[in-house]
Length: 309
Image (cartoon, rainbow, N blue to C red):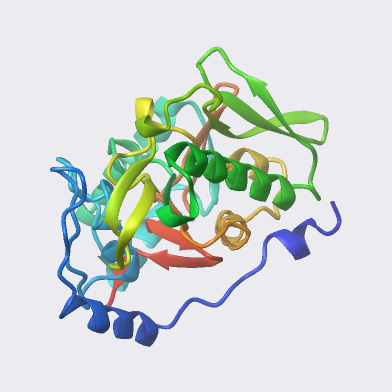
């Protein structure tokens, strides 16, 4: 426990804008994209006017859907939203309560941008939940089933290793068809995530084949969370959530958790997080109002949906 704050939640520097722009200049001008296997989700040209996070999300169902509400926000828009939210939440980072009360609080947000953020957080079918976006080089796996087992095992082992200084992680079967991961801490079992049992699952139901990566590299990849939004029937495994744990431990940082967690994952594992992330446990809804901007975490770095306008 004593090593928890120092080892688990640390800050990492973001990749510089110059590196991102060099990548886009290399790929956007001369890379001919071929279509994915889906008629609905297909490669989209990257743009220097978009954030790195949005350029990645544009290649997936996070953006390519009938809602299409996810976008980049300016620094000024975010600062205005933070000022209003600090007033509404009395500067409290976390709000606890029933879902309907949380929703009423969020919809008290007044400006256009704040309403957009609230819609992303509480109403969007595609962009309101943290989700994995994973792509694996197909040449490294015998088939989709092998790739699926590797994906789930790496997600599980990274979470258990990361949380080992806090408590033991156990997995119990639920009546909802999912296995639930529970963290034993301070005499309580805190839920941190869920996954489907994969022993008899058809990998093709969750793992897709694509011929362009979300960063624009041509090749055959096995993907999860790219062509389909990994929610509902398409959900195989969701990212572990630190929100219920942070209600017990004040040193738990949402941003720090996902930086540390994605640093422990292999290359090709991304996590999208919405604004005002929520988590329900034991009849209580936890909302972190300090996380105002949607983001994508990858390899220990946080990329926000923000641009200079």
